[in-house]
View (cartoon, rainbow, N blue to C red):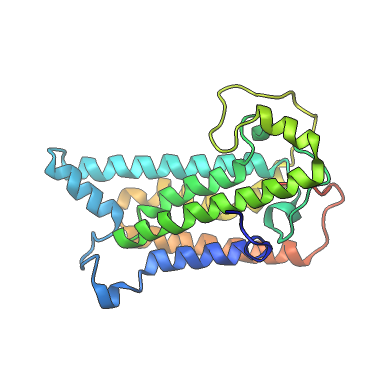
Length: 252
């Protein structure tokens, strides 16, 4: 089932709401699903589970930190790579675009690298959520992301016709190919703009790497909120300002 135009247009705020609910788990006030204590987040619960199987608890925390850091950096790198070939209004805007087919960078390996990067970042963030919140996030966020993908691909198919059909026949939707599946079209990446567009993801990844060794999920969440605030300020600036001259409309 495809997302509605309303869901696509306001996807940023819908996703923000999903994550806010996942982190706060307001149902715990009535249901008490996650208990209490400093390690009620997924990171702590998984570390405790690993320690019961024989692993040292400190090593378990470190292993999960490494996994979270790798996921966070993978998500940030993939989205930045994809954003470098897109215009800012497409990456952050509320309207679907389809005047040109992007066939460079990660789009030669997978059709939806932006969404895949978001999902990898969500997996990293789930370590900091209460267990019920992480389950809620995966159950709600993953299908919603897939519905956005289907809606956007339908739009592109209608807009671009056979060109997009040929592209889809060669490039997988969400599981990247190991080698490029199509020839590069020659689009030049704008790395500075891409990094600015993905400030939140890079802030999250750097936070995992820089302060995660303190094994303090609350501190990581605070760093994440700072990154989110900075990204909202930057997003507001670019959304309200003029577009760069080379921001040709393309599809994400």
